[in-house]
Length: 123
Image (cartoon, rainbow, N blue to C red; front, side, top):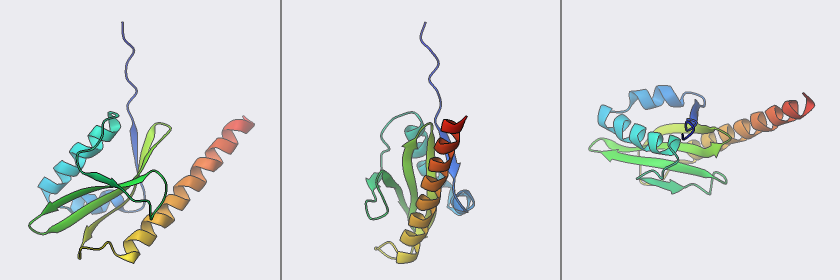
């Protein structure tokens, strides 16, 4: 008998989940589908690396008649995918403000992970 596959968790940083909820329904569904693929260990359909933010950081991309929508995430650490930032792009180039916010949230996530590992070693 095969063992049950452990599900990957999703951690939403800052206001990412609230921002995602403000996206049009079709965009939310498409991003959700790709996020589910990540949780199942599959490659998302519309993703690209964001090396300018950090290692193992990617973005999910969707577009509709109203604009471009992005979800920046840190690929699975342990059993969790960390959603760093969700936003609607106003121009073709990602704004420095959005890049900086994702970098700051990545820095905070990595610091929390280091602290958790430090505490695990002590116990």
